Amino acid sequence: MTAAAITVLYTFRRCPYAIRARMALRYSGIDVEHREVALRDKPAAMLAISAKATVPVLQLADGKVIDQSLDIMCWALRQADPDGWLVAGDTDEAMRWVRLNDEAFKPLLDCYKYAGRHPEFSRAEHRERALDNLVHPLEQRLQAGGYLLGSRISWADVALFPFVRQFAMVDKPGFDALPLQGVQTWLDHWLSSALFLSVMEIPPTISKH
Image (cartoon, rainbow, N blue to C red; front, side):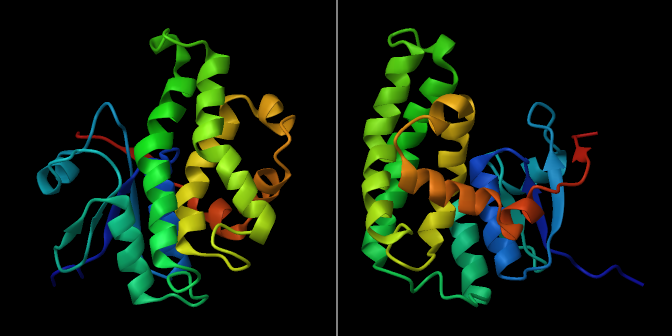
């Protein structure tokens, strides 16, 4: 008897792109087999289906491959969206925030996180650049509505949260001391959520061997 086809997600526990994909899949109730990837020893099965060779990569039971985190989120939410994340707020506004995060903030975050590799600025200066780019505007937005697009959770909140989490974790005491009540409350909500906690429970790592 042939084994039933399954949906597989190649992932890495701490990767913010993978975290947002996992959160959307779990929220939507998609039954997925998680395969934790050793980033320095990537499995051949993942490399064979995705030329980009980075997580997340979702292979559906029918063989279709989705290997961009936002595409995985959108696919999952189109299967099931019980709380209306896709329709909460303005779509163009959501995309503006996500582009700001992915295209501008993420490189600044990496410079802050790995400041020793980017000596053109001090770590403190890298932090200020990241704060000015996204975190301070996010604070203003969250003070106004509680969530990114208003009073309801949207997919954009989940898309940004793992990156803001990563920023905060670089220097958590320093982050906690900043006057960012809106961002800190929003971040604490997600950090303590059952959804986030559940997707951080990842099975043992697989490698190319």
